[in-house]
Amino acid sequence: MQEKSFQEYYPDDLSHCYGCGRLNDHGHHIRSYWDGDESVALFTPEPFHIAIPGFVYGGLIASLIDCHSTGTASAAAYRRAGREMGTEPALRFVTASLQVDYLQPTPLGVELAIRGKVEEISDRKVIVTSTVSAGGAVCAKGRVVAVKMPANMEPA
Image (cartoon, rainbow, N blue to C red; front, side, top):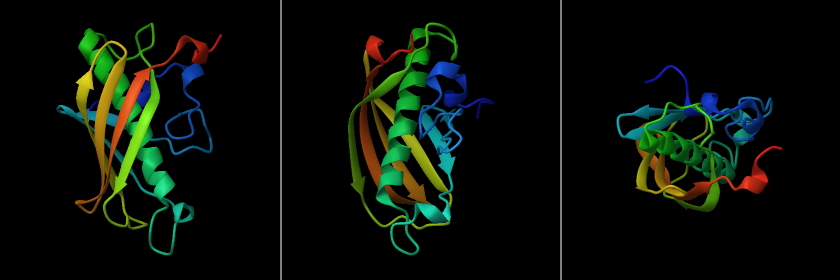
């Protein structure tokens, strides 16, 4: 894996996301990396990420898929453009659509692996499918349509 995660290349003014922002002290700090043509992130839920005893809250699973997929979209856009991550102008993507299918309960207290694949890519849109696994068993899968961040969301 590369030394820095996709999210560590985001400029400071775009690093406050609850799911992946390195400057959000209360966030999840999701960190995604390339693993060949797939992206991967590892995350261990805390005891407060509980749904019912022993299992992870589904909203966390959706958040992991969402932020991992938009990070993957950004990294894929840099790859497609032949640019190094972190070069300006920043290539940032936001979620236009998030679909999550919960396949089985996700156990609490186990490291989760989030793996993403780019299904489609263009200048303005990237579609990423991701899975969340615990102990090798796929617990959830998702599909994110990520679009290039609109100008009205960019910091002034």
